[in-house]
Length: 385
Image (cartoon, rainbow, N blue to C red; front, side):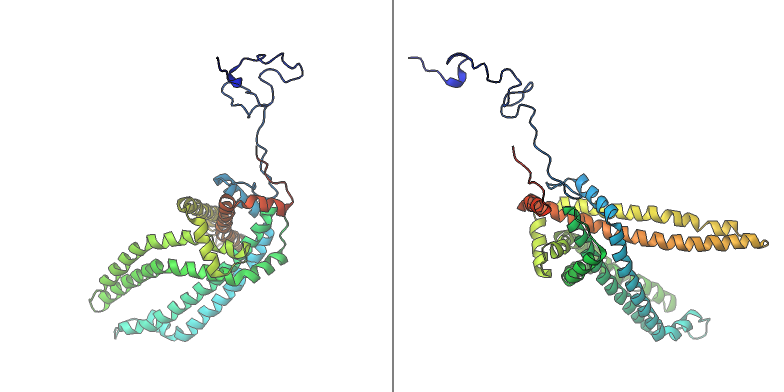
């Protein structure tokens, strides 16, 4: 007895061919070209993922992340600019008040040190009050900027949450949401800053040790070069560990805003989402900071060119030349203020938007967030084959 397999029989082996059945290579489900597999014919292609906002609701590539960050800046720059002006303007006033208080505390001593002309050499202990005062002012300014940065990060995440869904983001709504989540974001920023503070403080200690070494050598011939070497070695050892921890918890501010989580929960969630993608997140986040720094430099470049004009056009013998120089000086100050504000927004907002989109991408890849985002935006979920 001869056994046959139905799939191996030639067409028509089981009877006449149906005249209404699709014929030839164009039949649905049939191959459409050399090497085309069955089941993928008929010109079928998977439908594009829905895109209600600044990114497609699918796993994101590098271009999607950078493009989404730029698009968010382009669509919502007024809101981000308003929040940044309010936050950093207040921070500048507070820091200025702190510096004024530090100068009032040690101003007379500082004047004596600056106008010392000889006689009795100042002892090394005379420098300590100045070091303490301005170190305190520096730490105070760092804390104020940390709080301001947390508010800006919270506002960027709040804007991004609406931008991904294609919704408007007004100043009032973003400010209220950012203010509600600012405590949790500040907690995550503070914890990450403490991680990065170890090598930073060691580098600061190395710089202070180097300065004190030069001062001691000038005054009494002693050297404190050992403190410089010790702090520098500590910074080199702790730097890679701090970088690893920074990437591990870099998504925590976005978690705090998107999920409404507390600081500790956000840190844990960030570590969970980063696991297995550390190098990818590190590279894209570092690229985001590099792009922001380059954009800031390009914004500041016209200011540096304008600063050269008053000195070249000033003519002390002509009133018109002096008036032109004053006009250019005022123009330079205005343009400089605008450039500083725009550069600060780019530096502060763009990397935060990039890490926020990395958070969205990791949740899409690991937790199928795309379907939930599509439902929230009122779009159709991506269809499978």
